[in-house]
Length: 465
Ligand code: SF4
Picture (tube, helix red, strand yellow):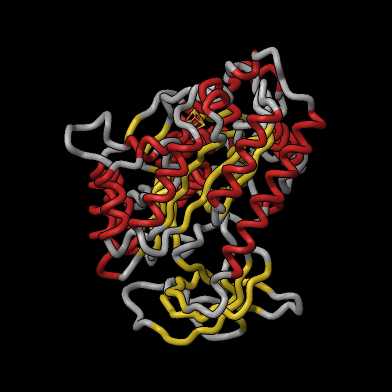
């Protein structure tokens, strides 16, 4: 096992790479906060400077597992100053899914840390970097719940899943569903808001049933109101992602409609709409029920934006079933649709189904879903042109000529998935709310002009634009 031989009084540099979804981002951020609190370690952005590397992996799909393995093996080749291999820790969903099997199959990896052991990351780092006593570095800083890196932050309200959709390995990777307690979530939200975060994005595998395993009378609508009260003094936003249709209660709809801080944005990962396909997926509903729910959301919540997920090529999907999905997507016209090609996953019920769809047909169907998703998504973006929206400044990026331009998002754009609004080379501060008139739409990307600014509140970071 490669370890650094440097004296233990030397602070060690740690580099973290995160793969996969927002839930993994939160897990990496939690590890980062624990590592930063330890005087023995320092986080670095450059893998070449690292004394240890953590690759936090995803194993939701076969392709994600391959990506995680490839990247880990790439990191294994890096060297320390003394020529020894950099210790590489593989954390997250691949170790959770494959367990002990990995120790034999990937001997190059120094340590494996499954999801439920990530809070021990500092001890693991000490072991792989040759630190025999963390006490020699002094006491850790007071516990930091999260590191703040932008105007928006994901907050995990639950983990695991009890739905056992037949195509999904998540319940086997992340375990049974559990809600994080309200006080733990709210402490984390307060700490993020105090650090400058202005948008809290609540996530979990199945957010709609949050609280069902906690004391009676506590549910997602209640939690949204509590989080809204925390962000209200800084005029912040709350968003909730991954709501299954069954979770859309009257109270939740009323909360999204009536509480100003809760943005009118719903992410409903429907996957399909044909009743028979949904039964085979071990899911419920049909196109009529879904269309009714979406009509209601649009009727009752002004400015409603709806995102969904659609899957092509589930085992046994007939031409008629696929056509039903296409015409449903066309009828509803979602603002955003993530399209997936069914992936045959080891250990899942659907992976064992005999009538797997031919790969070429699956690809053809996936492309057709992409075309429909883009046609309606681009049209939704184009309808924003000429209108003025409240926008949260998120940061800056380089334009085609290498100039820094400010970017932001409106309430209808979730972080990392729905595009951004380009604001040009203007002054602005990360976390500032501005009113922006949309001048142009290119696919999902919008270009706009700031027409007014809201006075700044609280502790905000300077943007480098
Ligand atoms: S709801 Fe279904 S798709 Fe989502 S994590 Fe749970 S089992 Fe997987």
